[in-house]
Length: 79
Image (cartoon, rainbow, N blue to C red):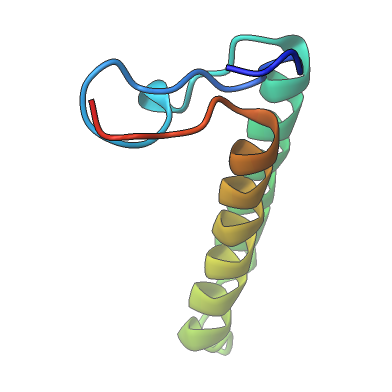
């Protein structure tokens, strides 16, 4: 691990970040914002809301979350 502060620890088994639980307050803010965005998007879905738009929005938010985990977390590797 480098000297940079870690927001998301790597899993002890498998590949990725450990259960998605942050180890720093900044990581909790990022995770909370992701969850709040997901809830807000879910509340926007109605009979006239295209479900594909919801999927694209969740996909973009998830990609941003993974990018933040990659930059501010421990490097994931198979363990």
